[in-house]
Length: 299
Image 1: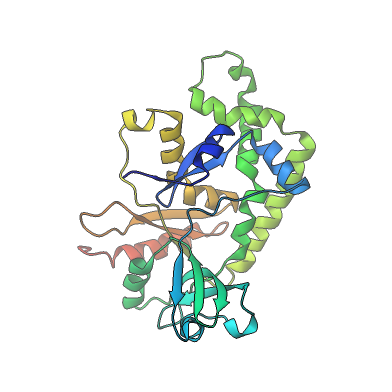
Image 2 (image 1 turned 180 degrees about the vertical axis):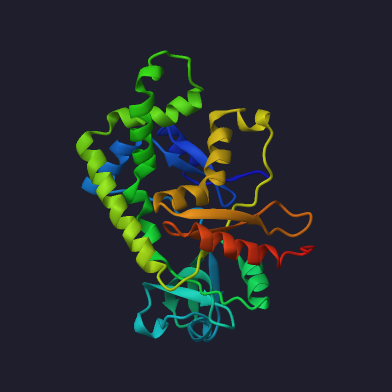
């Protein structure tokens, strides 16, 4: 599949961006390094390229009233020219997507949805009697701040590997590229990152309180050949970032997880990540066995 490019792609490339695939788009992952960019956003300002987000225009007599009947928030609370965060739900009240709605007039609303869609997985489990609740889970929005560009793991990896890295070509260049940024993480920065991570782990646990587990469909991917994966830095980081999307998040909140196949026959392989918080391995495994028994062809 050919990846779409943002109108700002050439500008990102000129600034030295490292790219990765996201939702069918080739998007910038980082530029000059995790610590420099993190400090720049905290002390100054950051700009986010939103070109890859979905776009839908609802136009016609009564457009605002029509959209208001479909989404959870109340467009009547804002005036034309303003925007509102809202949710699109199914008939049972489950969240299909979160959306930004721009009210242009009573007869025109511009919607910005996301691309994620796990309807088939939710429908399958719901039909089997499970209760599925879609949670906003705002705590996950802090993941990039808690562990900016993998600063915690790179700092720890550099401490362990720093002497061997001096041997030059003893490491795969792409592995060394992930480890070396840890050299720039000071002891004070590392301690602060760990403090934020402890708070993050506590907040995730509190958000999941009362829930048996968390369900996260994986990215639909067929495993690449070695030749495809190592063809270039771009392809390597594209495959790597997609495969690590769910595990990276679960590792950050020190959770436990497993993945079960849930794709349609003949479709791109998709796993259903089933995750729990610290020390919930037994519960996650038990739920996994129950879900596995619902899969087509299970004995």
